[in-house]
Image (cartoon, rainbow, N blue to C red; front, side, top):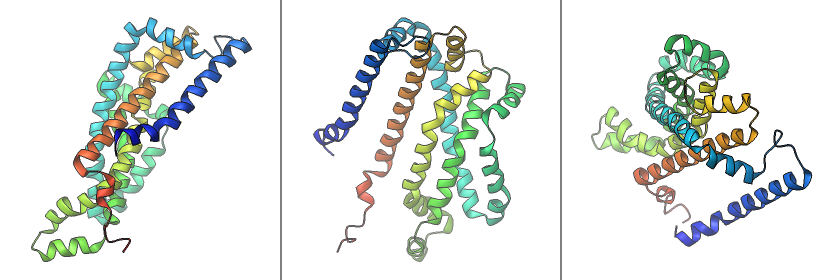
Length: 260
């Protein structure tokens, strides 16, 4: 897709954001809304610039926890998904437990990680990895199960082993669906890391948010939220770029004879 087409495709989003910010700013100014209730975009921007010397380092710590935890989630999520696909016994034994683990709220698990890991960064990385691997594991299983049988039949007929077929054929065909799970996981990584920090940490955006809340500085709460959103967008762009590099454009997977 050309740059012009990309810009044209994103233009409605840009316009919608500009209109939303303009309405937000006007509503706060004309309505004389209390700054402790909700802040105008201009106030949030000014507060972000003013406090960047502390907000930036806090964001760097949360970013490190999120990225490292996300990489662990991707690796272990795919490995667990493959294991669930290959072994019916493993699937029957552990899939319900994996699903049940994801239903537990973070606030009930975080105290345990504080006991096990203390206030160190390693505990936040583990929390991020645990909460991030489930959608990846599920989509890996579903992707492998959705691979048409003829792919395996062709590979095996040509002399490939079942293990080679799994790693070089089935996973390649299922890769698009696996990336769907990776994107779902990436969308919540930094929010999970920040929440874990809020419940107990020494540094990071969670602690920064807690300090802003305790001092009733509403613009700083919005500043931290915007930083988390921007970090998530950057991670999503990185995921999309890696998919394009590894698998090529999505249109390359379409059957050219499908419409004939």
